[in-house]
Length: 202
Image (cartoon, rainbow, N blue to C red; front, side):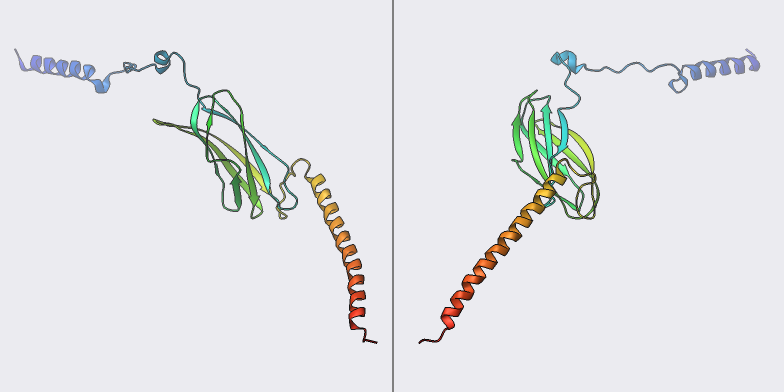
């Protein structure tokens, strides 16, 4: 066999090996073996363990505190559910309920968190509802933005805030009138007592 024929056979062998090599193979990869959890359990678990609805109550014109109403509809049963707030500096809050509570799937639960602004500005707040399970933790989150003006009143104002503010002025004015009347009559009685006390004996 001459040298030219050997070279041709060698190049042909290289070409065959190169085409068969995985580095040059084309087409879709073979599918990996997967486990269909919904087929095993009979039903697929909901994407979100909780449905969250947020709303605000009327801001207090006296303290500027703002009720945040959190409505929760669980898609799972949980013996240890927590509602946690992620709020930036300048916005304080207080939960008006226990840290952990049990929920049943499909029922609606309402919790109130009191927000109190410390500085004016716009704040982005995250509400997290967490199921602290034994084997895994599941959670749902919802964000909202809220703006407080220089007077720490929300922009826009909450429903009935103006009416509550008018009521505050009426109450404050009534207290001033009552204090004025009490001071007037109290002063007269005090003046009469002092006159009698200072009067020299006869």
